[in-house]
Amino acid sequence: MIPRYARPVMTDIWEPATKFKIWYEIEAHACDAMADIGVIPRENADAVWKAKDVEFDVARIDEIEAVTKHDVIAFLTHLAEHVGSDEARFVHQGMTSSDVLDTCFNVQLVRAADILVADLEGLLAALKKRAMEHKMTVRVGRSHGIHAEPTTMGLTFARFYAEMDRNLARLKLAREEVATGAISGAVGTFANIDPAVEEHVCEKLGLSPEPISTQVIPRDRHAMFFATLGVIASSIENVATEIRHMQRTEVLEGAEFFSMGQKGSSAMPHKKNPVLTENLTGLARLVRMTVIPAMENVALWHERDISHSSVERGIGPDATVTLDFALSRLTGVIEKMLIFPDNMLDNMNKFPGLVMSQRVLLALTQAGTSREDAYSMVQRNALKVWEHRTDFQEELLADEQVVAALGVDAIKEKFDLGYHTKHVDTIFARVFGETS
Image (cartoon, rainbow, N blue to C red; front, side, top):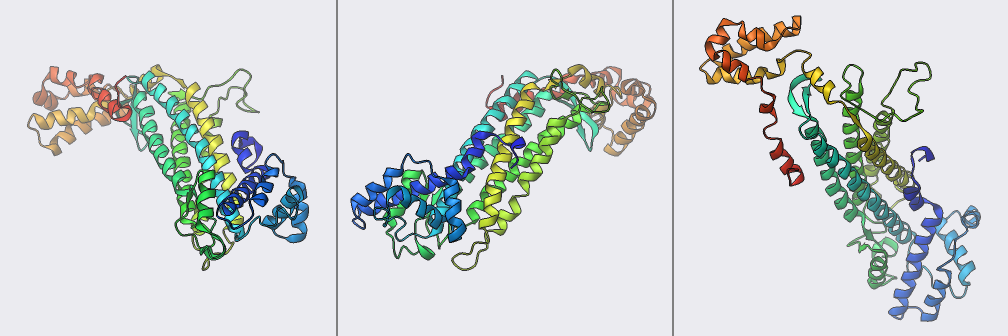
């Protein structure tokens, strides 16, 4: 991923130097385990740890790989340059390249997941704060982009909170799904390496042993992981789309913070564009595009092939780096977002009283009017408001049939905004487990 959309805390996980350090730890812990069960001499296992503070030379490993055409062999050759050829002769004994590659990849995904978990927790905190702040800030709810009935800005933030909270639970499960390691040798039978070695390495790296691995860790685990990242990205886009709508000039119920010196357009100095949330919409597409390749990686030939390898070298860093950046950016947008309550009321009253149509409809049916007749009575008055921008309550009060059915006081009573917010506390309790 390009540096523009990347944070060092995540990109560091995918740097070659980090990868080689994990490879080294896998090999060194494996040697320890083999020494513990008497397969190799203890002094050889101890010698491998001479390299524990070494910063492996990426350029040197690349130089060796240019000849060997094999990255793991190139690394092992470079490791022997630090440890000594004789001392390192038992390194990688009984192992296959995938033992190192797959276990390392899962370590990287787990570390990435931990950062993403923290990102989501930060976003949840921001959403909760804004939800509480605007719990009773009334705005019009929309369906099909058209005014429906009153809701509150707090409920808007609360539903995004609930969605991201579900994503947090999904991500924790996805982390668990990929937190496995395999040190099982060629085709995964442990023919040349004891399962105790795998158990030891996994324990040291914070993983669980893969129950059955063939020569690779099963890729359905990774498909689950990347699919979860795709769902989270879609939720980011969901929030971003709402904010983009609110910032439209003719809506202007909310907006991204516009900093001092910021410019909205190279041509039109008046512009304040929702560039951050538009950017988030695009980044969500990039994350989602990693999902299908991850799913296609599940079907490998027999015990293994490497059709998945080139894919994962790209989607591993790209998906996690992009999602980390997007979550961080969205958190900042939510924290600084401007809310315009007066505009919300102005928008709702653009067609005065029209959002109360359902309440009048229900009152008519309760008063004994058939639903069909009640709908017709309400709609004919509502259409006048649509067409002539009149006041809905006044139209109803001028309709003799409606007045005869409900009475003047009952009609006026149906225009109380508090009717639509009476269960906000109940919803908040469901979402947050509290009411304030």
